[in-house]
Length: 428
Image 1 (cartoon, helix red, strand yellow):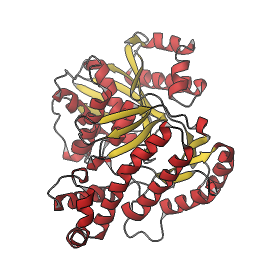
Image 2 (spheres, rainbow, N blue to C red):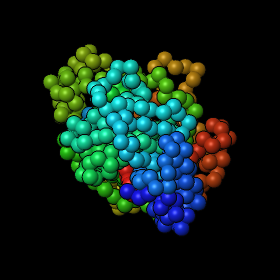
Image 3 (cartoon, helix red, strand yellow):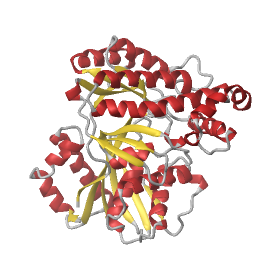
């Protein structure tokens, strides 16, 4: 660990510029400003001095490229870390309490004398703090109290998985402070999933946490969830002639937990018909043969969602192979196919019963109009609200952004790029 004052001097001397440009928005000045702000926030919040030993950590948001709602069925996903992150300055505090001050939010405090899930903390950040500490302690590490100040440009509800980034950030901090950096990226991701499932109360799969923790562009096969297969790839979208845009539909994820939960529940009902736990264990041929009986047993929507799973699982490999050979045409065709499947089969575009307010459907229609037959767009992540993803030809980028922001509002179209690293210690 480095003393706070030494980190300030290194920052001013430009010693962090290369790392910040690579991981954040390719803007050293902006990166320096964010690090300076998080150092100031830590110092002012916790009364730290220039001699206080600290660690700087970062965990990115993620974009799901293919594999919409396949991970919780032990399927395949294609995802990438992106250059927005949660940045933290942290240090042990010599107590049995974790204190985390996130800019703009109340301070989270967790005493370590009890690490069981608390029902009253469900769907809160403090539940994730407690859950991640419990996961590290369960692995035999001497977790103790620490202070952290965090700054995020992974907006909650953005579809870039701020919760997974937060879990990974906590894992990176605890790994460095108390675990001797012994935890690998996949283990930290698994800890994050358990914290989200058991403590936060959201039945998420493992894709979000793995993409944030591992970083880069990764094709992940969750057939064995304890030992997922991760295929890392180097992908340069700009070299292929495209930019990644994440578009905010303007709709909120609030009160949509039941919508998200219905998808693994219904897919699981199909699997249960065959005596299995998840769809990955079901042979597609047996599923297709049983369609008439399945419709009566589990209902049409569950059957349609299972149809999406089997096709989407195949698409992941196709998209990964297309990216590996830089075949933009094949890649974009599969992106568009994935988007249609999510809309028509998975049905995670519009919340159940919504008629007047269909923000995500409108945003997708607006994006397709703005693309004018080039590029591709699709739902991004969990769906129902939040953001969508578009791959936009570089020569149409400004025209595309202008058209989107004219109908969805200024600042609704975010230009991002893939980030080569996942959860990271920036300076210690």
